[in-house]
Amino acid sequence: MIDYLILGAHPDDAELFCGGSILNWTKAGKSVVIADMTLGEMGSNGTVELRQFEAENAAKILGVKKRINLELPDGGLEDNNEQRLKLVRLYRDLKPKIVIAPCPDCRHPDHVALHYLAKNAHFQSGMKKLDTAQQPYRPKQLLFHPEFHPNPKVDFVVDISETIETKFQAIAAYSSQFFVKGEKDKGTFIGSEKFLIHQKGQAAYWGSLGGCLYAEAYQLYQGIPQINNPSDQLGL
Image 1 (spheres, rainbow, N blue to C red):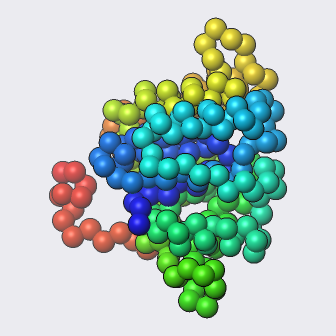
Image 2: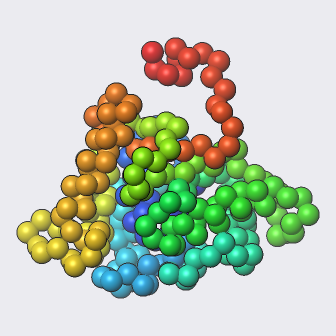
């Protein structure tokens, strides 16, 4: 059993949207695994081999327990039975307490597909009669992270004020994908200096909602959390 399973459509998604939170959790001794769905083979820049090298370096910076890749088709993620079963097997194998995936309203269609894959696999992994030669297991909670859409629903934020600089070091490990100081923009949306500035601005916005400098935001998939001692659990 692990504490957190972070699902990314492509290598670098986990760093962009959850990197500060992951650092918080690994520093606190929590077990975190990143599962990239694809090798990013359709990306405008870099090669599969280079992106895998970058992903391994970024994982070391984040301190995660393991990073795996399901090698599903980049640009071809779909909420179909074949791809969903791969996630079911992953859930049952790793037994994560919490799974994190993208919100449904995303710019990239692979991210949209991953939202529904993660949600439907979450349900199916607990079905006793779905035979994968594993014991049924349903993660206790599924969280979604917002991306680049206006006014997303947010249930809580994680303060990453102390880890944001290391988060950006992990992002910088993907030098084939993101802007490098002293170089020109890479000719893509994410490869521009503006993109990284906006990323930090977004973290500042989430921080303003949570009363801290920088934060990452999340949605709960199901249920309202039970808070027995608001003073302790709300940090008051």
